[in-house]
Length: 243
Length: 243
Image 1 (cartoon, rainbow over the protein chains, first blue to last red):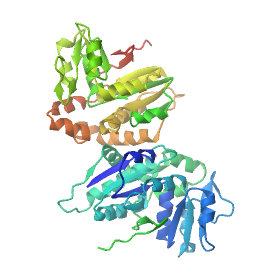
Image 2 (spheres, one colour):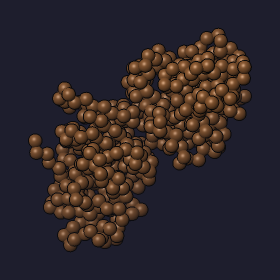
Image 3 (cartoon, rainbow over the protein chains, first blue to last red):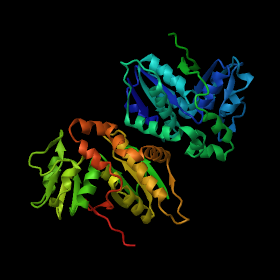
Image 4 (cartoon, chains in turn brown, orange):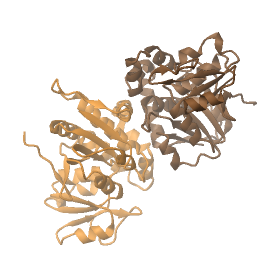
C-alpha cells in the first residue's frame, strides 16, 4: 500500500488521486474545526470558498461560519475558531463553513474514492479507517497560500506514525515517499511537545498575535477525537465503516 | 536574515533569488562529489547536463566524470561515485561532471549573488560562510526528477542547525520558513545515526541495490570537509572569504 504525503495543493496536480483515499489536512484551523463540530453533534459541515457561496447554501436552520480579516463576517453565526463549535448549539445543526485552502484541497481531490478531513485531533482514527479501506493513500497538506505549512506536515507525519504502529496483516506492506519519511521524523521529534511546536510555526505565530492562542492549544490535542469526517455529496459527515 | 528551504527545483520558480546566497544541495551524489573532488586538490569542477556538453567542454588535461544507467560512460575517466574523486590523481585537475539535477539547480539559481554546493560533508562550512556574507539565503534541494529527496532536505536541516549554533551578532535574527522548521526537526531526529537514515530513503535504497553502499557511508559523514565550492564562471571552485 502506497502512502504519499503531498506538500501543498499545487503539488497535488502531479499525482493521480483516483482510487485513492485522500486525507485533507488543514490543522490551523479548517479540518480541526470540522472534526470538532461533528464530534459535538453537528449533522454535517459544508465547506465553501466564498461568503457568497456560503449565503447561497444556507437554509433557515443552518449555521453560517467563517471569518475575513480575523473578524466574524456580518450576518454570520460563528467565526473560524474550533472552540466556537463545541457547545450544545451544534446538536443536529448543519454548518456552512467558509475556508479557502480547505475547500481548494477538497476540490483537487474530487477524483478520489474517499475524501477525509484529518487533524491532530483525529489522526489515529484517520489512520485506522484509511488502512481498513485498503486503497493507496494521499495525505494532502492544504498549506497556507500555496506554501507548505509546518502544522499540516507534522499532522501527516502523525497519521503515518499511527499507521506504522497499528497491527497490520502480514501481507500489508506500507511504502511511503521521501516527504513522508521527513514529516514522520519531524513528528517524532515534536510528539511530546506538540503545543509548543505549533506555537512556533508561521500559522501559529499569526494566530497568537491576533488573540487565538487557545485555538492552538485545542488543535494540538493528539487523538482527542475518534471520529473521521468524510466528504460526501458536498458535505463533511461522520464516516462509519461497516466491518 | 531570511533563510528559505526550497523543496525542489520546480519550487525555486516562486522565489526571487537575486541578491541571495543560494546553497544547492544534491547529497546523493553530485554536490558530495564536487566537495570531495575539490577537497582532494582538483582545481575546479564544471557541472554540465549532457554527455555531449561534457565532451565539448573537456580539454586534453581535464578529467571526464559521470555515468548513465549506473555505468561509466564510454571514453570517460570516472563514474559518479565520490569515492573515485579522492585519489592523488585529483591534484590540480579540472573535472567535467555530468549531473542532471545538480546542473538544473545551478541554472535556476543564476540570478543569485553567490551559488555554493552544500552537502552533509561541508554543512558547517556552508553555514558559516553564508552567514558571513549577510545576504538572505536559499537552501535549494535539488531532489530527484522533480520530487523532494529526503537526503537533500535533511542536509538543509543540518545547515540550518549549524547556523543556529554559531555565535551570532545580536542584531542578526535568523528567520526561516515552515519547511525549514520541518527539515530542522527531522535532522535533529536523525543526527546521531545519519548513515542509517540515508540508507532508508529512496535514493539510498536505489544506490544500495546497485552496489554503491560505500558512497552512502561517505556522503553521510557530517562536517568532514571544511571547504565550500562556489560556482563562478561555469565552474565550482573553492571559495575563500577575505575577512
